[in-house]
Image (cartoon, rainbow, N blue to C red; front, top):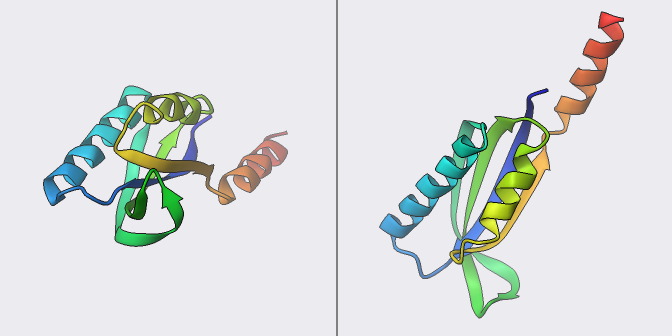
Length: 109
């Protein structure tokens, strides 16, 4: 079953505009390689971190909204852990997906 997810990434603050664009393209390719479909990308820009991460006090935040099956987030997490440019990331399933799935199951019975 296809579900919608949000992937929030925090990249190093010493990136140039070109470097951030290349990282975003790399993450898009990771999602596509795991049979995910990009729905939306939001660039939140450079923000101060709540605490220092790997000697960085600021980071570039980007939110990728994508669709994929249940195995897609784990596969993407594994690959994101290998990228040095990404300080932190979080993948969360969209809230409305669970209730819609339940409604469809109940109505289908």
